[in-house]
Amino acid sequence: MSLNPMNLLSQLPGAVAQGLIWGIMAMGVYITYRILDLADLTVDGSFCTGAAVCVMMILNGHSVWVAIICAFLAGMLTGLATGLLHTVFGISPILAGILTQLGLWSVNLAIMTRPNQSISTNNYKLLVALRFLDDVKKGLKPFYNHPIFVVGIFVIVIIAVLYWFFGTELGCSIRATGANINMARAQGINTNVNKIIGLMLSNGMVALSGSLMAQYQNFADINMGRGAIVIGLAAVIIGEVLFSKIFRNFALKLLSVVLGSIIYYIVMQTVLWLNIDANYLKLFSALVVAVCLGMPYLKAKYITPIQQRKRGKSNA
Amino acid sequence: MLELINISKTFNPGTVNEKLALDRLSLTIKDGEFVTVIGGNGAGKSTMLNAVAGVFFVDDGRIIIDGNDVTRLEEHRRAKYIGRVFQDPMMGTAASMGIEENLALANRRGQFRGLKWGITHKERQFYKEQLATLGLGLENRLTTKVGLLSGGQRQALTLLMASLKKPKLLLLDEHTAALDPKTAAKVLEATEEIVRRNNLTTLMITHNMRDAINHGDRLIMLYEGRIAVDVSGEEKKKLTVEKLLEMFTTASGSDEADDKLLLS
Image (cartoon, each protein chain N blue to C red):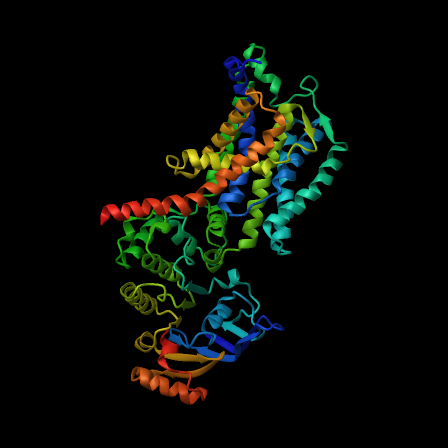
């Protein structure tokens, strides 16, 4: 087996397209994990919910756009479920997310009626599909059908809408809820409602991402969201580690999450190209995220004191 | 303006840690009155303030602010009447948000928050003027993240936020206790200025008896969840630390009131 760089290069557009689609999910994770300061595990279920709703709607003859909007709304409902479990019943956010995620497995199965459903590019008019990569390359379809272009537009529109939303009075109060909940309550902000809104928005985006993914790969599968939260966290953290020094603006921070997701997929593609057993991919992603999450803590504990000691000596 | 009628609160009821923090406490504060509150650790000072703010509901009694019974009103809904400054400088502001964003949040206290832009151009000018009154130079750093400010600056900003939208009631929970003496004096000076300029009805908890005597129109001392000493008017103006300790000993029937306890 030889490692042909051309093979890797030919896989790149696919990796970028997938990275963009998962990037939408990762922005959803950013809303809960960074803005609201909640680790929401609903994601693993709501990603599949979006895919299932989208595929079934298309199979039943609805247009792709209606299907995507319904997927988004279905995702919002999953966020509502987690939000109510957390705020009304006082269940910790992580546990509330796990409960919703578990329940969603049955719901997703009920939506799809069986563990997987496929939608062929030949029979249905899809917005994005893996095959379009080749079609555009061969000149069979115009450039604006290229998945990177289509999903790229989605990403730009979503970033613009989020940038507007988190600048509004309501958006600011949601940011305050995540930044300092005591202060938020003291300023008359209904923190419970805000958490629910944030969770709904986040899971709506995750489901939207799932609906695009189902179209891209031409099928929805009951297991397709498994580990999504890890990919989302990886994208958020990779984006922060690489771009936090240059990207200060909120819109650019969201963009860095999407870039983080693309980089994650390029790395994964490279790992596959190196002929590493695909079964180890999940272990690999778990390790990457564990290292990234642990890094700031270890840095603060061991490296910063050493730097301070050195600085102290040079000052003396 | 504020009426507390026989309020009681027990923490951890039915356990070994059961603690009666407020014991049928009653207090009436007039409009525009500046009340300082002292008492030893566990006397119920913070519990009283948190009960008024709605951090928890009281077990018994009623709380009335400006004629409205707020006893069962949730914390965020009660906030429209109340401005608050906490002991911990980190608690009153959102560190990851800018100075102007924090002020804009405070400026909408008690209002519906919709999809209008979070900060308008007109407001910025108003914030600049207000920040200038603090004399800390913050008026030129509107977009600076609050996390980059010192404890004293954050406390001064929180004070401004609490009074920006004139509250019916200002609650100060040992808001200078975490600051160094020099900064504490400055923040206290700013407090006096803001309270007097806006004629705010104020409850200020302090650990420092001298501060309690030197500021405000009325002084109350709590002991075991009840009011042990209540001094106002001319009597308050003539008050000294020694006199206060003596009054406390008589009122509580306890000699616990050595100044070590009260000044700690």
